[in-house]
View (tube, rainbow, N blue to C red):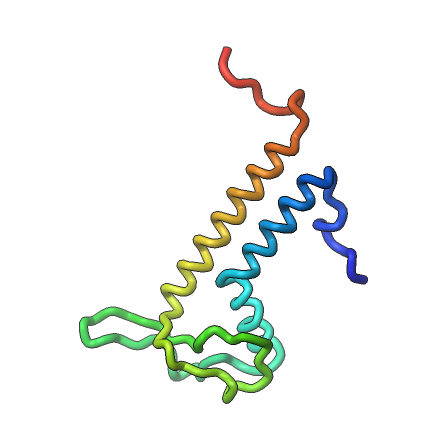
Amino acid sequence: MRNQGLLPTLKPLRLKKRVEWLVKQLRAGPVGECRLLANFTLHAALARNPFAGAQRTADGAVTLPIPDPPAHPINHWYLFTCNDGRDGIAFAEEVRKSIQVFIDDLLNAFEKAAPKRLRPQKGP
C-alpha cells in the first residue's frame, strides 16, 4: 500500500525526484501544519470552540486566533497551546502563497521534463 498514487508512477526519474522534493518542501511549510489541524478536526473535534471565533482588536482589525503549530498529531484539544497569538487569516494567506509557489514550481518541472519536440516553439 505504500507506493500508491501519482508520485511513485512519475517518469522520468529526474522529474520524479524534483516533484518529490517539491512535495517535501510543501509539507515542511504551513501546509504540513494544516494536515495536523485537519486530522484533529476530522477525527476528534474543532480546534476552537464555535463561539470563540473571530475577534476584533482595539484598532478595529478582525483576527481569527488559532493554536500554536503542533509538533505532532494532536488527539485532544487540551494539548493545543495558544502562546504565539497567531492569526488564522494571516495563516490562511501563508498557506495560499505556499500552494501557489508549489503549483508554479510543479508546472515548471513538468515543462522542463517534456521532450523538446513537444515544447512550444519560441519566436517566428
